[in-house]
Amino acid sequence: QVQVVESGGGLVQAEGSLRLSCAASGRIVSVNAMGWYRQDPGKQREFVAVIDSAGRGRYADSVRGRFTISRDNVKNTVYLEMNGLKQEDAAVYSCYADIPQAGIIRRYWGQGTQVTVSS
Image (cartoon, rainbow, N blue to C red; front, side):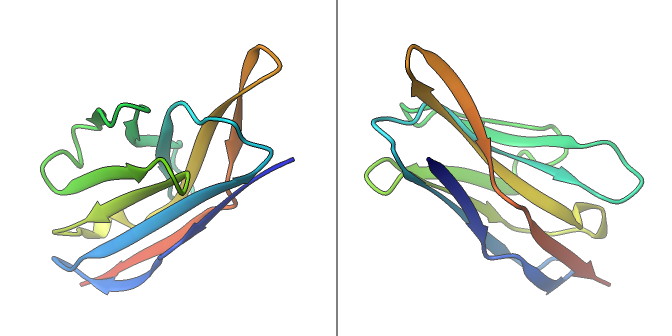
């Protein structure tokens, strides 16, 4: 069994910062990519950022330059440092971990963490 748990969401003022964390645990030998999506009610789920096992990150255009993704491979944890938050960044942020198991790669999702941005 694998569990993916996010933390760090909350309420922040516009132009403020938040740091999200996401830890994968359980029967894990290695973790491939880890990433973040977000979804606001009434909108489609949106890709935010992803980082591979070598630490190479990729970002959505809407967050590039403001958000930074990083990871700790020992802790199987990914972080999302969010700066210069805007009201349009408010959403439920969900993390995933791609984990090799029995010759295939399975994607495990966390339950999501709410980010609210006030004006």
